[in-house]
Length: 404
Image (cartoon, rainbow, N blue to C red; front, side):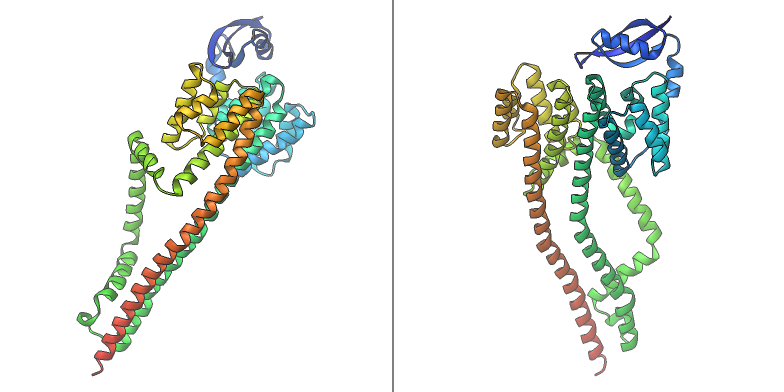
């Protein structure tokens, strides 16, 4: 029998290490499970390098729709009683994209070599993320992987829904800005120059407002490559600046001071937070482990700090509802639901109810933001169109003046 080194979690939070004797990695994993630990890494002594080399991810990226397809297929088959190995083989055979075929084959091979499904997924952490893998690991250890796929499918669909909302909100402003730019360029490159040439207006008599339009268009067309490079360099510089934590922290705090926008940002973050909190808790993770996964979904540094403070208070022995009250993470009405869940023993149900309620509020805020965009865009359209109209009127007046 070979000796296997293992790393595992005790009570889902404390890492433990040790050795077990077994004839295969699968038997070693079973022995670690019998010790009451959740294995995170197992390899035969002296073979760690080989294990690492064979766990390299073969896929670097999956779109959200591809993740939804893969999770949906796995959920349907595992909920029907089909083993994970057969489910992966079916996805490999019938997937409509090469990346999904490669993914399913690689995961299947790893499972055949003795890995659990969640361990096989760990080589794709950059693709699926820690939340996905952590929940699959919890579902696998509790024997409810099919339920975990169902929960994760709900999380992914919610992410897709939020993404669709943001895109739909951006379409109207983007189209409006594109039309304004097209009108501006049309006037600067065709209409104004044609009118000037046909009216024989000298360069010194061209109104200043007209020169601004035509001059701007000339610069854009003459130095377009330099401008693109400058925009690219500026975007890269901003991304590097954004990586500085104090810059992001300052921006995140200022965003939460803008009416409507602050509600939109807070509800988007809380929606993901409570969805994952509900899924993790229902999958059998402890409240602290569930909070860890849920906190990782928050993108706003100020809101994340409030959530981390809540977790810290829970660690010191506070009730979750009390922790949320002290950190102002939630509106009071939602704290009432948490209290009810703690008293009735239906905390998971309360997490789900809060997520649904937050989604409804997010719908209301999204509609309000969309309506707020309309007058703003109307003002912008009025300014641009008004400027071009005045410039054309001045040009027309100048043309008439040259006739007398």
